[in-house]
Structures are given as structure tokens and as C-alpha cells.
Figure (cartoon, rainbow, N blue to C red):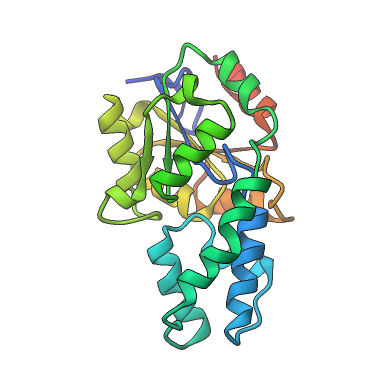
Length: 232
């Protein structure tokens, strides 16, 4: 089992770093939530990007659909998913880039195994890894919550990723930007850094991630590296 950092339970030298995708690898949450807010508003419930981030960020698409029905108080139109994907697919692929500092962080920690564990679809994960030229760093180690019974905030996807990578959950460091992701990683028995490097982060989000159980918060990848270095 890895050593621990003080009273936080953070591994000094994690044996596996687990990255969320959206908001941690891909700077996608601002656009994704803006587009989702537009689609929900279009069916009669005015919704802001802040509403979307608060209610839906970090969740699987099927859980998001259920959440939208709860938010609007009515079943979704039969063509909602089709219309939303038509609105968003091209723009997401054309406009979303990597989080600043990601490649340098991976290079600095190249000796530590890594993977992605995300609520997003396998198709999107593969697109991001290829579009951002990250395939040499992640290979096929991309784990989508579509493969497990429960999405975040359940621990299933994190436990699945650790098992597939051959590591004890206690030896894993998770980088997460969403409350549901922090809750899921903590439920899996992993150490979590709440990551604040995405363009979607709003005031007060750091406190919300800490309240959800994040052991630390980091403003960017440089700060993640400093946290790991200070622990060593």
C-alpha cells in the first residue's frame, strides 16, 4: 500500500493516476453545458449554463436524461436526444481542446501509470485522446462509465479502472473536477484532487469539491505537481 500524506490520506507516490476526461483532460465543460442549457431551454424550461453545471456535470448521459426530466418536471420529447446531438456534435469536436498544462504534467510524471475513467462515451474518449495526440500516453486505457452498472457518484467506474489497470484502489490518485466524480472516487477508497483548471470553474467550486470529500484542490496542473512533490 502506498504511503500517505499527513492526515489527508493522499498517496505520496501514487501507483496509478486516474484522470477524469471532461474538465480534466478536455476543456469541454463550458461548451457542453452551454449547449445542454440551450437544448433544455428550447423545450420550455429556461436553463443557464450555471444550472447545467450544477445539475448535470460529471454524469453519464443516461443519468443526465433522467436528471433533465426531474429538472423540467416532464418527460423529454422523443426527439430531444437527436436534436441535442445534432446541435452539439460538430461544435464539440471542432472547438474543444486539451486542458492547459496536461501534456507537460504527463511528461513530468511519465513513470507513473495512468488511465482515464469518465462518464463520457468510449467514442468521445477516443476522439479526445487522438485529437489531442495523447494516444502514446494513454494507449487503450480509457474506461467509460457506460461499461459499469452505475455512473458517478457511485464508485463503479473508478473500481473498474483500478481493477483493469491492476492496482489497489488505495494506491490510486484521482483528478476530478465534478462533485459527483469526487464522491465516486472517495467511495472507491481513492485519494482525490479536486481539479480547477478548466474554463468552466465558477467561484465557490473549490469549496464544494472539498465539501464533497476532495483531499486537496489544485488550480492547475502545476499545482497538482507541487502537491505530489511536497508530499514526497
